[in-house]
Image 1: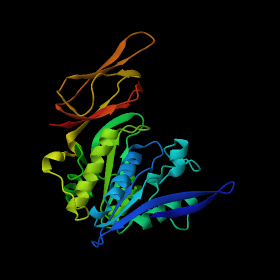
Image 2: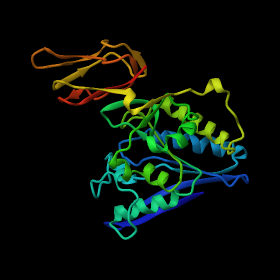
Image 3: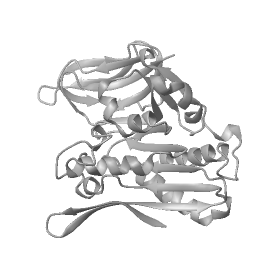
Image 4: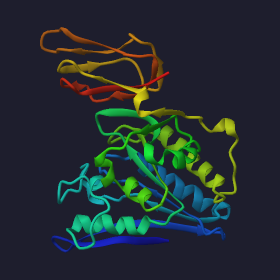
Length: 308
């Protein structure tokens, strides 16, 4: 059943409509929410929502509870290929918990939060931006790690990054929901403005696996079919940044193990033909983030590596 979460007036007789698809069967009373499209340039979640809708509607008898699928929290951002909310040039995921008496954007995020709170689990799906490519991973605030890491292990992803608290995170959907005792996992994968079917299919399997463990899906998955992710604490990650401005050239792929001193790529000058920087790994570890957009400036993030 399609339901409207937010309906707000826009200029020229148009309306902002944020919708969800509610699928229910069985008597468990449990509810899981799949949300994505907070950033208009992050599209991996669109495929995940499509496949979940398709699979669950074809096998509704296997569902025991309610799954709510929100494919586009920021539909105007998706329509206009903009990361933020186009009317306001604001990052929606820095506005929670919102304000019912505030601006249209503040009212919108408040209504979304109220609609989601109380769920037994929320999966907040993101892509990376257009600059970085990420392996399928879950990011968890260290303050909620004890509660959330066991759930994250079920999602068929490669990596769990338990990061330290930061003030800006207090304005995110996940932080706001977790503060309301609504367990929320943040998934990040792929690269902005693209869809990786392989990553999407893996996450769909992981969500169904999580639902199975919650007693919401009658199929079970053999343990060897579900990835066993590496769990990393914040100080176990090294950041590799550009020391020069130029074009980043690399032949490596992320999700590989690199050795300390191993070359990851080069920053070159297309004007002079010079190699401006030999980019090497500062440690032995898993390369889980890698620069996708080749134009870089001094200080640009090139890679993140988990120490092994």
